[in-house]
Length: 582
Image (cartoon, rainbow, N blue to C red; front, side):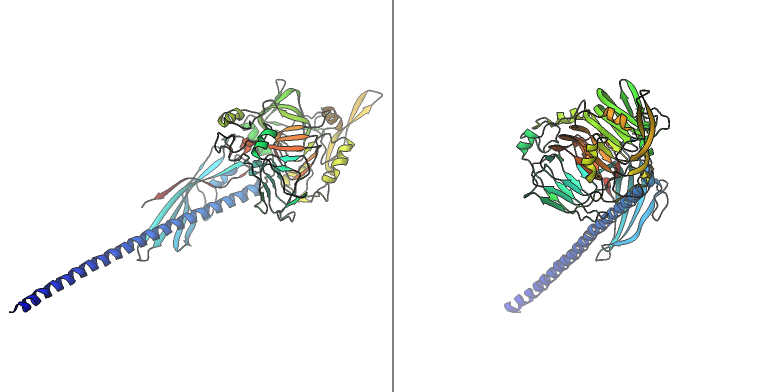
């Protein structure tokens, strides 16, 4: 064999071996790629499967929330028992506390088949200040990868459904109707909101944002309209610090040396937000649930060392006549000794109030609340400006006075028995300024039908006490007369004897009612909250609305006060989340 032949014979096996090695490597690589592709497919499918499970949970949370909200609005249950609904809630199942129940069965979401079930419900104690129901939801999502591999993902969440202080109290000025915030001397040191069109001008100050929302009942689109030749004004931080006083809400940041602390503090900006989603303003319905709160919190009103109200008041009125027209009505006068309030109290009739208040609590009136003079705190909260020690401010304000005045009827300011009061207010408490509106059924007992005409000067079908002086005997003869919506059941004689001789210049309280805040004040400062359906206030020179930031849903100085004020259904809150590995 020649040398050439020997080389050829050697090269052939080497070439064959090389090809074989390459084939093996290629085959391995293809196998690896195929395996990696399958793994990647399973991983991607798992992610999609997990996302489908989460989507199903989110949908279920919203469905449960909407169903509960509908129940709460429709039936207006007791605060203490409302969340019992979750223990008997049925949707494809009956009874949650005994066993798991299925809410979603085999739904197809993003190609995955998903089932959602409720594993259990944990309720807060019915006597607890914070009312909640923790619902454990489990979603099982089944998928197949492109390679046909079955993938299952299971996610479990504990979702808190609760009642919280209504979000309307996040605003100093909230009107469940058309809103007017116009004319010189008008200042809001917080956001303002209207469930209806909002009218602003360039003469007023809004040191915050302005919101407007559609209102189908009024035919309002939720527009914001400005007049007066320019945009609504707002203050710079330095001007706000120097001119607003300690009652105005804090700024964010509070000083040059602090970071963002008050999420709901003023940030020296102002913007307008028309066409927003309307905020639900909860009606004060049957006050029996608030009487339950009053009993549970041992609510009291004291004065001169005497307990005037323990829980609720339905006793004889100022006339002294048992079963008289003013039965269940009360006069509270803190001009010489403070009115001391603790917790929630319910007064069946009207409340006449003025003077100094001490403590923390809410007065619920079955009809009107008449503010006949200044209402001021003995120990008012304070937000220094600038504030280099906000933590100390939070601690100090926690124990400061806080009063809520909540009326099923109206909150009436000033001396309505004067002719000038009605002359000045009439156009703003009658149609066409006030549109007809739907009323809560429980307000029928105080003269409001299913639809109210809008005329607060009309008779409400109730009676008030009258006092007729007999000059021969030197005594008063008591009788009754027809009562108007803006009037009290308490006789004019008693009102006149309690009205302050000067105009109202300060009201330290959270004002809330089913119908209107109306009347006359002087150069006035409202400190707390101003929430109503209709607003018809006549002021002199200037009016300022300061917001008590302790009411804020995101305020660091917020206090456990929400149960004393009207509540609404809170958004669902996920308190824990886990993926269950099979």
